[in-house]
Image (tube, rainbow, N blue to C red; front, side, top):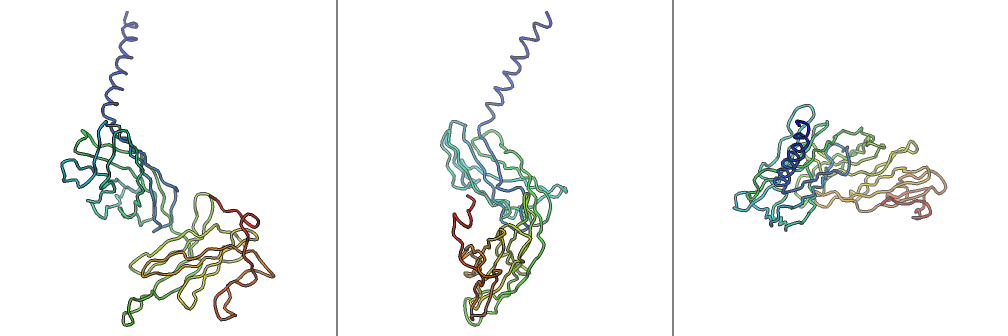
Length: 286
């Protein structure tokens, strides 16, 4: 008789538990990262998918408003330290309006919100609260690793000034080798003692021709790296005010020797190379 009672009781108990879970689960949060490992100071872009299953329209605005909602994060190093928030009032979901049953994906640069400059492994969880919801909802937790690269080349460049009397600021350019999860990558970082101006992933490391980096007369940065046995990537970066932008990227194949950056003609160019043809000499990944 006891066995029979238990058979009826257990399904009923599971029904109550599931019913309670369904009532509370009014928001779905799914957090994901493009890469599990990042170069130090590189922008760490996360995707947060928010699903509204509350049956009501939810407005995310200023937390002080009556119907305000907010998203925030807990970022912790595995060493036990908390990665502090630069602005405790920041709300990545500000001005978001979610209709019933709607899902939206937010792109969030997490290291613009939290200090993740130290090397190490970080655990990140997203939280959502709203004045119309009875509880705070949280996402899955993801782990990311931040690592420093090893310096291959270093150059200095003057940052373009806004006027002729302003003191010229010196920028340090570092060509780095970074160990990603699957392969080593060449990266470029522009910095000074106070600021990081840009970080770029340039291409895969190949133990062939050493990489080259030089500066032309207009302060543009020219980089040549070998990315395949017979393929070279040629990149040109330029500063616009304090923003470093990729101005051009082309691929070259050897022609009469080893491709190299040269100033023999009076301006910076590639010698011993010709422009590669996509689909014949190389194929770009999607």
